[in-house]
Length: 109
Image 1 (tube, rainbow, N blue to C red):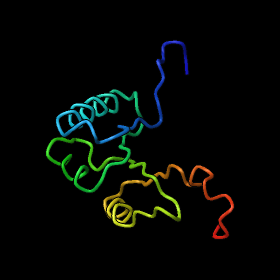
Image 2: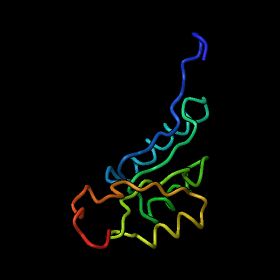
Image 3: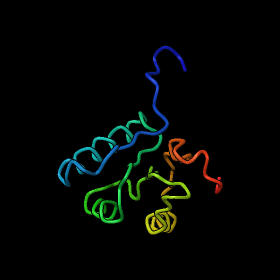
């Protein structure tokens, strides 16, 4: 990277769908702009359900999201959204895969 290159981020996520559909759309369109400008190599979402992702079809130029980051571990498998993401070429990224160490003494581990 030379001194004129401003750089980029590898992945930029919308953290939560809880702001409402208008805010989700506004945030997604902002991420698409960063992606178009080469400032974000990949864009995605976090904690989005199937309905939230389907809603994006109405306005997204980049669809499906590249990534959906969700809580995922043996005690929270979220099979329905995982399958949906797999079927739609969205990478599932797990957060809390070690259950925040709450289950460190569980024999399952």
